[in-house]
Image (tube, rainbow, N blue to C red; front, top):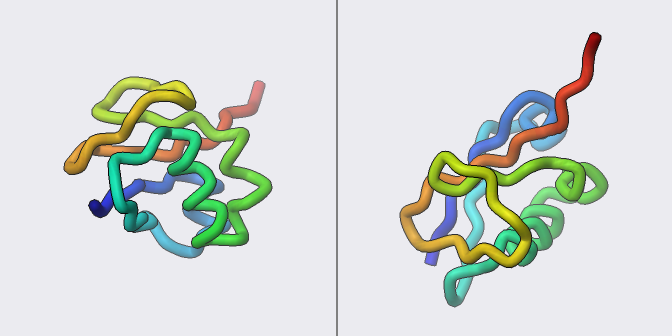
Length: 81
């Protein structure tokens, strides 16, 4: 299956693109998806763990399964004052 992950803000800058496409034999968990992103885009390896992951418009936790066709986004932490 193919999972398209949209990248925003600093994640997009580090990756040099606005999405990552992950190929998986079966529906991955959010944790497995993070690992695949880090492997495919080494520039995100130390950053991906600090980002939130949204699946289908809702924040997801590590054990959630990402189904084919789901809208997935990697959302960097926000800072400011």
